[in-house]
Image 1 (cartoon, rainbow over the protein chains, first blue to last red):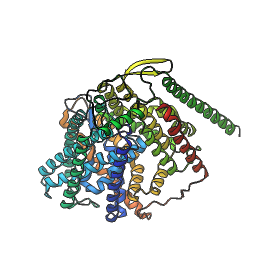
Image 2 (image 1 turned 120 degrees about the vertical axis):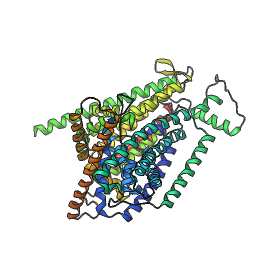
Image 3 (image 1 turned 45 degrees about the vertical axis):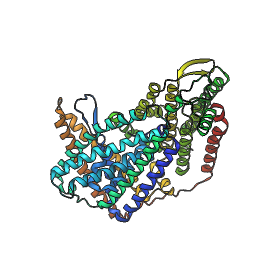
Image 4 (image 1 turned 90 degrees about the vertical axis):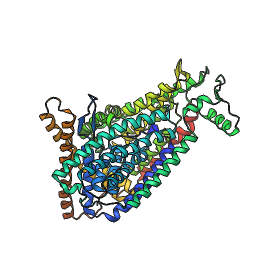
Length: 335
Length: 271
């Protein structure tokens, strides 16, 4: 579910980065006001725990050969409270990006929102709503299960929305959405099962952890959560309606007029001048760049020269660097 | 999650031995200020991503930048490409949906050759090419910069203190906990015979995760006591003072010239 750079356009990447940075900044400010320095190691080590926990895999039923692993955001927000969990999970995502190259640098905003902020807060809210402060074990388990499924779904739905807003994919929005929702329903179920099982284990070994008594835990008032969720829902709805009105998808191109391809017969012709102008501009500036269309071979040669020239340049750089390093090594050994 | 976990695990296992090896080398690139490298990497990635969806050949020209940095930094290229392969499955799957859904025919002329293909394939190549170039950029940043320096740089770039400290702790204890996860996994492998069914499988995994969790919390408590005893007040003290020196300016200027030159001179020709 880690988004890659290539699935985003720069405006979408910038926008999500801004939202993630703003949200995370607010959370960090709140957390640093409440949390004392003795809780910092706990948060750090639990972040490392998430990494380690994702390595513990187990066989899935009915699908031999596939294995699942825990995501951990809901477990963490149950144990630590949503603010701390959001900081911890975000730090995990940033380290995954920087050190393990999981997900791109520009996609960090998307990834923090999809896998950090949204699951932590949504999961926490659902868990709290079901358990209502009581700690009957059945309630705890149902709450955790529901929280996992819905929280992961909420994050997963955002992926196709962001990709389609960027207009990078050729896949129709609905297909991508259905695939993501379907896959992450299963992922959520497995996550729910394992979270419940871990909670059951902890209830036997360290009941204090499940009973919301871990030092450093921050609770959230119900009203805050509701307002946050409401704002989030409104933003999501606004985004979706925007999406519905102007699908910036490759599909449009096949219907509209193509000034760059004289032989192309439009299925729908649009008389609207703005659209025509935009289309013309699009045709002028992105006519399948790098590749000549229909016969004119000069563009073909430029791209050829570009590729071969770049390859040669890199080869020369490599040879020179290797040569220099060898000489350097020789010098040092002689001394 | 799910589909890519096998690869993620391989990546983690591989990195355990490799990750610090190159960042702690010394080279002209390693000595450049972390902030400068970080900002250039972000800008370069953004420029590459903003290229049109079907342009492929220009990506080769853009690749010169991170390639040069990697070579100057003395990072073995085999390691780099092996690593890109490890993290590629998700992107590959999405790239390959291009040819499935976008079947508009297109003639490609490339030097003396020309052949018939579809727009979908061009998009697919473009996504893969952009992926490779941006990954080269990210790897050339991370494998030439120590993580502690990168964090200090990020702190100077106004990333919240608590997040930076959090990442510092995370990085410090990451490999320790991965090791103990390996111990637990090995213990399971040593004891498991045949298939035990999903119910038992879940129970075992939960016990593993639960004990790992309790262990982490206990470890955190000990670490906390030790750090309090040594006067930790919620911020790192470092000897290293970050200063932007002449060579940082030179690197920044050269990179800016490369990005700008590509954008102004090469992009209009190659697209």
